[in-house]
Length: 509
Image (cartoon, rainbow, N blue to C red; front, side, top):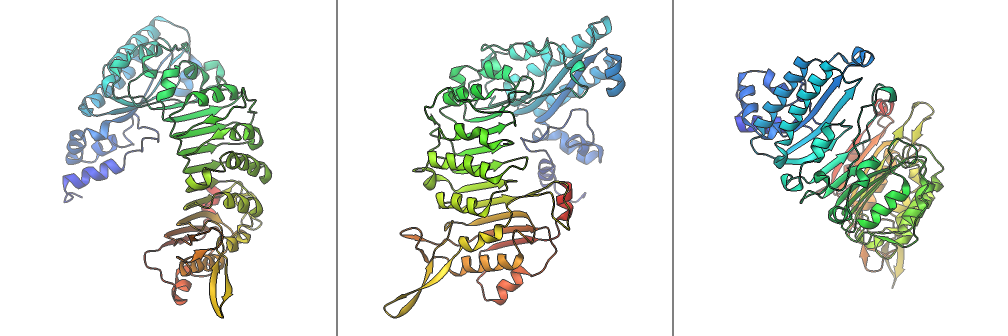
């Protein structure tokens, strides 16, 4: 390891950092990068300290606590411990050296205000002031449940002090110790909050109602990425009607993630269409009651939609899911059939007939992803399987080759669903859904007849597959790549990956 050049070692360090959408490392944790690198040897420590990029994402967790029950579980906080954390935060901020900062914040208060707690609160406020002093470098901010008076200090930062802030998130936060020990002093946000009026703010993730009500109409017009959690029963959750009104104001959205809880039933304020002309990515997930969102999907008009991700959590009748997506496709029947190219189904137990109908509405799909899920999986009976059951019945429809007789000669006729398919990704298949022998037939015909005219689409041709990944629950029966080569299939430029025996993954899921 000592022979690795410093620039390559720094690249390795950067690859070990969490992605922007993953939890940030705590400033106190020496078991996570980048602090982990500083404990190896002197060279690694000096190299890590010299790179500003390694210190631009971090999580701050502070609390003032006088409740004996809470600190019996969490450990009693002390002035010295908070002071040490404050010094570490200052070191992280100095190491950033002017780079963009992504941070997440949780600042809590427990128990009654006493003299010792006031000393802790004063020290925490000093730390918050230090963090706010670097607001000109903030790029991404995640605000968990932040108690008063620290929340008011954060939200009092004027927008001109936030020139780089592009994304802000307000995740739903539930106290680990139950409602009795929930954080005290949640502030009421107003539209004067500078964090919601930053000049470059373009992405908002909201799972609580209070921040949502503080966003102005002008800010909604600027937002390009939006994530909403809709629920009618969760504390401080966003009701369905409020979500509808928000969507009507976001005319410049390019990415939308809509999370639907089981208790949501959309009662629309208006039947007029919600037009999102620039939306390209739509992620509809945690749809536990899909029939309830059909009214909303039926009025969404998405003329530029190119990628759709549909994810569910619990098992329902597959016709409910098909009804919801059919409403979306039919509301955009003149545009979505040309624009949608990426389609992903996560844990959706569609029937082959319903899936065949949906595929017939979107013939331009080039990337198809099908992910299954196992709940208390039994390898003998396959109980608990949640995915596209009997998918093998649909395989022949993805490539159907026949013969036509014209002027005494035989020509091949290709009639199939998804003629433009280039990437096929299917994980956690068992024998009743898809076998490796059926996979061989599918790949062989798709590669062999690529470029032939497709009679299902006038003037269309069958595209060549470029990449296929399939993960089987069952053990290996047929060597897919070996059989394809034996049959003389041209594999040049084609990427194939097949995994077997994913039962361990099923148990984990």
